[in-house]
Length: 212
Ligand code: 3PG
Image 1 (cartoon, rainbow, N blue to C red):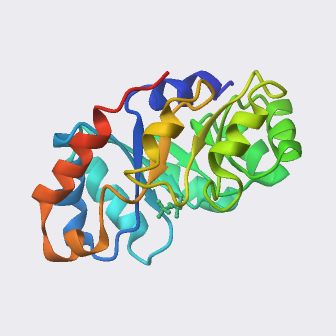
Image 2: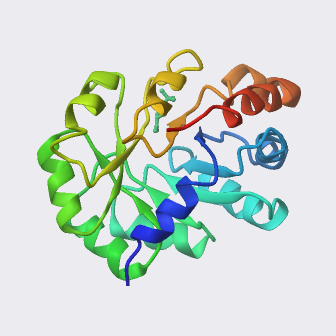
């Protein structure tokens, strides 16, 4: 079963995927609702906190208008856990042979991470056509994505890691950028203080950005 078309449909839903590291389950629903209200329905919940799976389940149950996926998925066991929790897609910072195979056979839309041309070529052999470029800013940023446009012409990227409100328009202007991921739309302080208006405002600014 191919997962390629599915992740491309999800990437098409919004120019920016908020990357959310949720520390307290109580913030999950208001945070998701603020982002959806701002026009960003595709949400990545990273598996970096003890409550990540619980937060994912809560958003799946209580915010049906969100398209909730899991990030920082490192191996096939976690991939299985996030699917059971209701994740509609999965994201990894890099990829292994085992994870690529598990994602292909599970059928979940999957956005695997790469940092090099060889990694991108290996994932293209597995049939993945949209790849997370991570950590984008540290690994070459716009320059890298522009440079691989011609040689890797069949691939598109979701740059993530160090992208900001200031740098995101330049990424989205590149023809081989499908969408961009980042945490700037949900600042830690805004989440901790329940400042959902600020989150909604940041999401609204991001959701109206133009893509090529
Ligand atoms: C990720 O997990 O994809 C990144 O940590 C998000 O990066 P950012 O916090 O620099 O946006």
